[in-house]
Length: 250
Image (cartoon, rainbow, N blue to C red; front, side, top):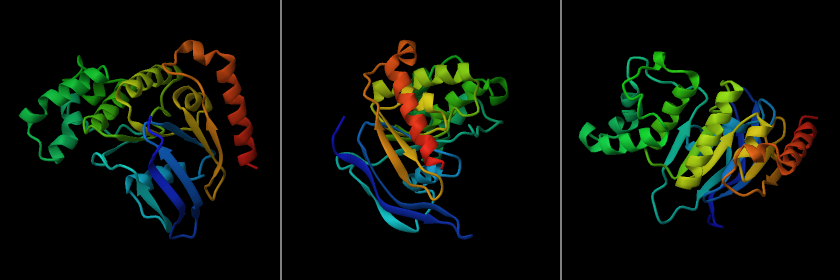
């Protein structure tokens, strides 16, 4: 993991047309290879931060600087809703960004097969979304992001609508992938336990207008397994973040 910031947000404010202040003077630096989670109360601007990083909206003031110099900046976004094309099978859903980029079926075949294997979908390439569980649909959504070979992965509550068992399994699988691929990940969640399990850094945002009120380093080694979830260190971090969240909501 590099010590240099790959993303730096400086004095970011976002005010919507109706006068709602979503973010106010937010400052944040994320290092290359970090897994950073944003947690906070509903409406505090977590998703707004992701969308501004992704270039999906305009900030009212401030700037975003990129520390990528040796390779092109490649971002991928995973939303809470898998948003799959119901008329297309798994293979074609994952191929969509390559198709939009003008890459032929022949040229994309090897990369698609590698991505299917990476997320455990190699036996489901011909299935349609209606034939998949919620967890499998989210795997397809993640694969569609990963097939673009990003160096920065933005994830907006991707597992928020899933049951706890499926969520726990996908958390473990995502962490395994991150340990292999070394992306920079910015992950939005309402779930403290998920944030502590996945991240090496948890940022807590206060209630609107959004700002960062605490920055917690999760000093636990990877890989992490179920034993970590029952450890005193894990519970200590969960309690610490819970206290910060309670203060942030006052």
